[in-house]
Image 1 (cartoon, one colour):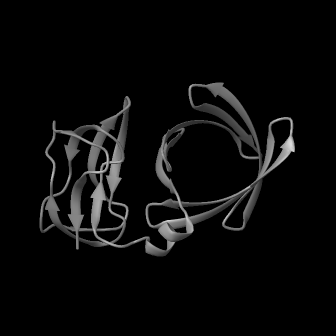
Image 2: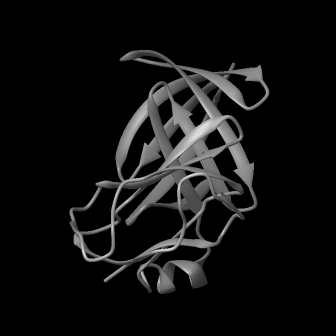
Length: 159
């Protein structure tokens, strides 16, 4: 099975091959590993590879996946060919799902670096950190701490 995902500003080509008994060959952008996956229920999985064991929590919303792997959090979008061609357009950063803004960490006019936290949103009992997809300048901040926001609404606009 082949998939394409977008993780912030990075495209990921993923190939999964079942090996039997809960084991998978996983190739991500050419890097190969073998992983055992055990479903724990409620979107939780125990993943074991040569490096050790980790618990993954996955929440699905359409083509979007919210993934927590131990202390790391990712928001990834499954890509279609048409969406991959248009990826990277625009400078807006949107709420990944409905939630409450817990922290606003930037102001208009501020210069930010790629990966810098801009805002935090609590959704589904998890905190999702909105990070800068590239170096740039904050054009506008469209939400305040304590504000309830719908999924897909612009929170921060960058230049």
